[in-house]
Length: 135
Figure 1 (tube, helix red, strand yellow):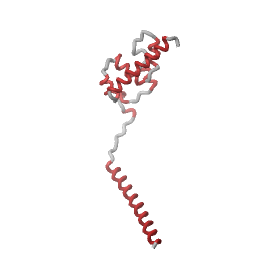
Figure 2 (cartoon, helix red, strand yellow):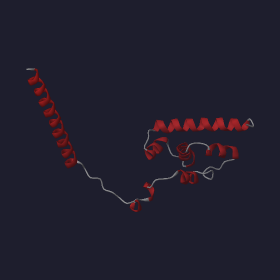
Figure 3 (cartoon, one colour):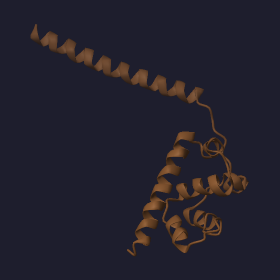
Figure 4 (spheres, helix red, strand yellow):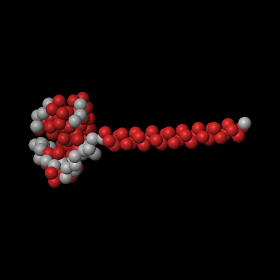
């Protein structure tokens, strides 16, 4: 009887494994059939506005020439900021955009723009205080 029980357990295990595989393959087949195909576009066909911007390009775009810095210390402190914060400050103060407009353009929340502005100005103050102390 024990042998019979072992045989039934093995049969049940094999059937369960087989059923799992059949269900898995059926799900894959269904997903492949209902999957929407994405169109691929070559890099050359992309409009210039949607092409990636590399960090070196951003440094050139948001260089100290965007701001008319009265002091070189401020320009140096500005360059030390992360690229995104430089971009946000430039949009706020040079292009005079509202945080809501910037948020839409950068695909983030307006609160994030406010936070980044706060952090950037805080960092600028710290850098200027360091340099002002002669450090």
